[in-house]
Length: 430
Image 1 (cartoon, rainbow, N blue to C red):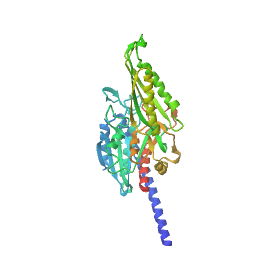
Image 2: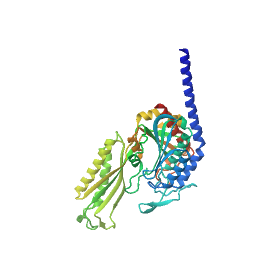
Image 3: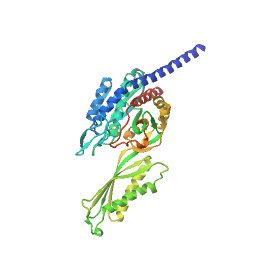
Image 4: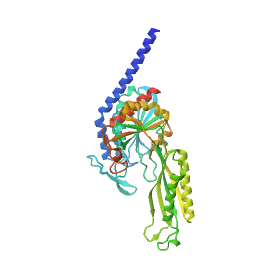
């Protein structure tokens, strides 16, 4: 009995030391490639590409992944790249995701690696900029692949690295993004047991991590309302059915859905009109007016309810003026939902990677992410990582999707550490 107890104690101590050594190895290797992370990120930042057109970015990614000896698939969902790393021990298949695309925004930040690129977008010449931090996501996942490839024998299971195109949306009527990757089977062969993703944020201090269980980021729907009326001279409005006047009433009615019809104590709802177009001349009442906007919800039942209310509101307001309203609603993303049991299990990994003082829970947000589609196929955990320079005020942080967007890339190694610890820790659990 004494010998058995001593042997058990020896095994437990050896296991604990091994786990500790792996943790130290991750930290050392992640910090050692910080210079590479910055180099990769700035190269990608200086050479941005729009969704479904990330040809140079994909080639750059493939070039590095080949040097690591990984199994590589290209042209996934048009320009996506998927790499497979088989660990030295049996275990689950764990997916890690980074998005690659930039935005049609002209960079205004005074940095040496600022984008000067422009490209064709739906028939127009537009500037291109990484105005949402996807360049940092690619760099952190490349770094994660390098560290984990060097620790292959210690990995329990398989790691699937997903470099996703068109997170910001595919151009025109093209398919793209996470939805297309899922449709093409990225979560199969091998079947993914769990998926992790992160997003850098300009208002969170660099090195910090914030997360939320359950519903985290909103669904994103785009709506279009075409109001059809009757044209007349601007001096004789009584001869018209004025679609511009009707559109103004509809816009007001849409806001009443939020403020007077939805239970906002359950979850937030946002209806925003971002575009209205009607007419060609100041003294002609046109026949049609077009309203475009977005809907954000954090509950699937409320999402369905809002869609029905928008349709009813627009049609009835138009009908009251003898006009016609045609409503079209397209779902772009689902609610990004973090599996609560998975979050509970993986919080210690975040604490190990970033330090207890740098990890905190947060409230849900009305921004959207198509990472949500991956979560329909496996338990998912998506979280924020900080990119705000130390000492800055979050209130003054440059917003995402703007010309002034900027993040601090001095702590990208924290993202690499986090991904690596999540993989190693989850693999041990299964």
